[in-house]
Each structure stands twice: as structure tokens, then as C-alpha cells.
Image (tube, rainbow, N blue to C red; front, side):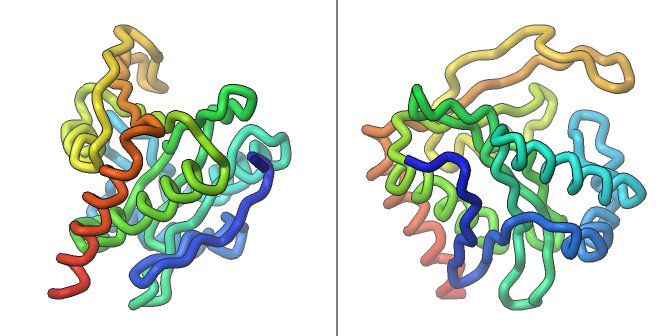
Length: 199
């Protein structure tokens, strides 16, 4: 179980590439779609803040606190988002998939489904995790629905969990997939992905 290695994870629709400064310009364009970074209930970097966010995530990787990837749309050949393994707990064989965002044009295309399948396969089958967690803002209903659709179960809500940059209080919804659920979750994701590739 090596929670410090940042591998490339490749699928048919998407490739998860170790995040680097080379991704900044493409990620700026991705985040400008519908100005998704302006949503108050998310922490998506602005175009002007993208370089700093990439550097922050890279610094956390250097400190062995995060594994950050850029999400590349294989068909278009461009980076369309970011995702990470965070809250790494190798002694307890668990981690969180989080700090994820995806350009609107890449949503509902199968890219997120395959990205999650790649991440969860790596977590459960390579790293030997016994649990993988997801967290999101109570008001981010799209994210909550997407996490539940993966097959994750809601563990609970952390009330007044975080204070946002604008001073608002965040209730955090916590979901997880545990090791015994992984075969069924993997089958469900594979079936969803097959529907996208048959279109």
C-alpha cells in the first residue's frame, strides 16, 4: 500500500494525469465555462487563482497529504477538471476522494463515471482501502446526487462544519463506500459506463 505514489490512471474516455503546472492554461479555460467557479457552495478555483491552486495541491502532494490529478478528456485531448485523494490515512487504510470539479461540457458524458471507477479501483484494489469517503456541501444538491448515484451511502451530516471564505457556515454531508460494497459498486459503475460508450 503506497499512499505516496501518484500514478497516471487511464481509461477509454478519460485519463487522470498527475497534476502539474502544464495543466494550468487548459484548466483556466475549463473553469470559465458557465463561470462555475462563482458558485457560492463550492471551492472551485477562479481562472486567476488556478495557478496558485495547482501549486497548493502540488505542495500537499510533496508533503504526502494529497494525491492530485488533472482530468483529461481523451476525445478532445484537453484537461476538463481536477480531482484528488485527500485526508490520507494509510494506517487505517482509508482516504477521501474530494476537491473535485468538472467543466459543464464534460458533465453527463461518462467522464465522471469513468474517473470515479479508475479512482475507486486504485483505492480498493491497489491501495487496499477498507473505506473511501466523499464529502460535499449540504446545498450542493448536484454533487450529493452524483455521489449517491455512485453507490455511496450517506453516513451523516456535520453541522456547522466549516466557515466559508464569505463567512457562511457549511454543513458537510459525508458519504462512503466500504470494501464489502466495492464489487457491487464496481459493477454498477461499469454498467453505467457501458451505456455511455454505446451511444
